[in-house]
Figure 1: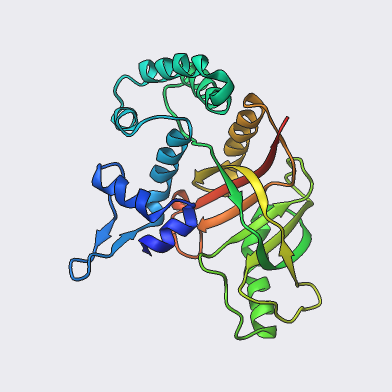
Figure 2 (figure 1 turned 90 degrees about the vertical axis):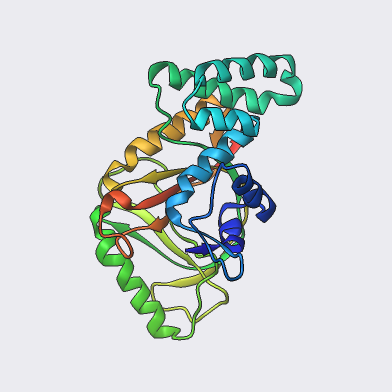
Length: 270
């Protein structure tokens, strides 16, 4: 579980906003300690928070979000918002393109399986290893060995809180074998390099389109297809290599259907 402060940092949302979402019934903490009033959240609540943040970024009010989450008048709500945004197109063009994207997808399928959130990726200090892997299944053998190697060289090394573990794909295209990747783990200080693992600073990414994918890695292709379409439909282009940030996985969830991965694609406006 995450205390409200850490949950706030992970998701780039203020503590005040989380408390407000609790008060109005949008997102209740998983657990509240009655002895001290501390609120606690879990990773299973991240998809719902992403949905709320995505709808808020699109300009919906709290009451409208309640209607959408309850499945009432969804198409009417989106159409009404689109009309309102057209009257303010010079000031609200960003919101309008997001609404249009939602409408296009909802006409084909009334489910909204992925929610896109735009956010900054922070500057971080990482240890990283760039390599060509034979296939995606190789992660299960390679990544634990990276951890063992860096821990042996730096037994007191501490990971950044909140944790940020991700893979960068340098091929800039989908490949099923011989994949050029860079595994990164954010840490608090520079340690001792090994022969294959190096410490370095990763610059801040001003804006990235992000979605959460729940399920096995073999179905990540669906998430990527959705996200790249969203980027194109909303007038953006990819500015850097994509990242996969691992929130829940084989290390803490036995069922692969419970694995949670965030896709992060740096973008710029065309």
